[in-house]
Amino acid sequence: MSENSPEKEVVIKKNFIHQIVEEEISAGKNGGVVHTRFPPEPNGYLHIGHAKSICLNFGTAQKFNGITNLRFDDTNPSKEDTEYVDSIMEDVRWLGFDWGDRLFYASDYFDKLFAFALKLIEEGKAYVDDQDAETISSQKGTPTRPGAESPCRNRTVAENVDLFMRMKAGEFDEGKCVLRAKIDMASPNMHMRDPIIYRIMKAPHHRTGDKWCIYPMYDFAHGQCDYWEGITHSICTLEFEVHRPLYDWFVEQLRDTDYRPRQIEFARLNLTYTVMSKRKLLQLVKENYVNGWDDPRMPTISGLRRRGYTPASIRNFSDRIGVTKVDGVIDVALLEHSVREDLNRIAQRVMGVLNPLKVVITNYPEGQVEELDAINNPENPDAGTRKVPFTREIYIEHDDFMENPPRKFFRLSPGKEVRLRYAYYVTCNEVIKDENGEVIELRCTYDPETRGGNSPDGRKVKATLHWVSCTENVKAEVRLYDRLFTDEEPDEHKDIDFKEFLNADSLAVLDNCYIEPFVKDAKALDSFQFERLGYFNVDPDTNAEKIVFNRTAQLRDNWAKVKGK
Ligand code: ATP
Ligand code: MG
Image 1 (tube, rainbow, N blue to C red):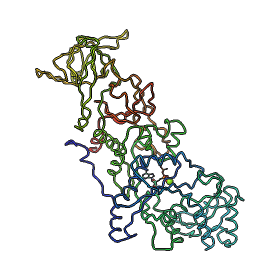
Image 2 (image 1 turned 60 degrees about the vertical axis):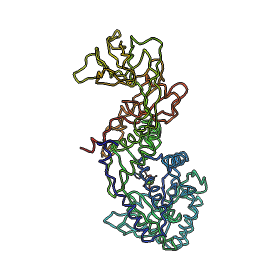
Image 3 (image 1 turned 180 degrees about the horizontal axis):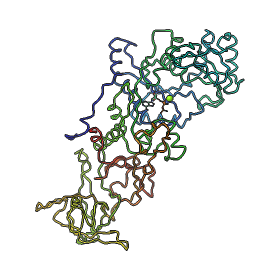
Image 4 (image 1 turned 90 degrees about the vertical axis):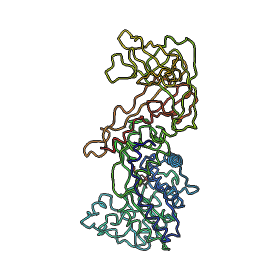
């Protein structure tokens, strides 16, 4: 880590959840057992916000020798799909976490939940309401005004059991009636005002098929599932704080021991220039604003993976942002910093030219191929060296040449000498243009005494350029990405749709790039640093005909600048 590394400025915040768990273990609560769960709803792909929750749930258990369940909260068959289930498992594993044999689904508990609902009815704590949705909602009241009791509230137990069984048997249409918990229509907590716990949905379920036409509400499933699984710490995001009394109420009706899961809420992750809601991400996919859930511009875990993010970079990011009780927005530059930092450590260096300008070295023997030594990774001495072929005709970056340079331009221009990385000093003697006056080729001479890029007479040059041989190379397509949105908080504008802030220039495709031969056997997702240009990885679109690279990140780190603002 260098002296002025921005890393030093990043404060590792204390994780308040770890503090709570530590105190409980010392007090001997739950016999010292720590058992968490990650409970996604399979209605979309996971995003970087979920990664925070995954790292927190699995990470907390790991820290205290505990275990973590993966549980799909699949209570809404109309939005859920096995495609999402599969992608979620792949993403959690890729992040480096393991749920062992503890894979569960809320749907595993449908029988138990149904039996529990019946028990509530029998105890006079639930009733069937056959008013329409609008009427029920109009009776809810406001936070300061109590709700009105439903005329169905005082049905007899027998009547309720009968109606509920007929709901289950499919006798009623969707929306015709619901089952509600009978709690308190005057509670200051709106969630306690006789919440709906079962609804009719005539949709097949991705796991239970046609077995059910009534489904428990998420709120009626979540807390009980935690209880049945023996979860000690139900970690969730802040918006569930107000649901906690309801979850506790259900578990209270159920439990026969002192044990109960403890819910702890934390602030969800928000990132600048990013939308995080699955609903909005689904919209971007469905309406083709991006090329699928794993588009490298998406904040999904699959998008970040395809873009070249490493699991370690995401875990480090998650540690670094810490866990708090206050909603905030994290600068996306910190995420970018995390991947740069990890790739700097591990990425193989190569040279690649994205906007080629041909250079002919007129005093270099025609047909000669020289193998020059190049360092694989200066951060890792064990990574060794490789050979890069040098020839009479090479490509340099178009931007590295200016015919009429301003004073501070030290790269190549007529009469100037520069170093070609790992190769020789070259001097530009002639500029060749096409009929439109565009520079299309340079004629240079090289100094054979400067092999390896060092001058024996101590002659200094002010620039070192990367280059690729015109004959010994791999031709590539390179996809450059910019942020998907032009606004820091695209979904925080009251009257403007977030899609208005989509960045029209978020993807640029360069199809005439040349990379040194080293990459010819690279596999999908392999990462490289293209010297002077940034971090790139091999896109899975690569095939026998063409190799495709994604730019993961530029070399320049904005994070230090951000911290100073
Ligand atoms: P979204 O609001 O993006 O649709 P969600 O909360 O509906 O997400 P779930 O599948 O229910 O998605 O989430 C699974 C877990 O991930 C929950 O415990 C949830 O609290 C957590 N989670 C979701 N979004 C974030 C986020 N942005 N930051 C941290 N945790 C999150
Ligand atoms: Mg949810």
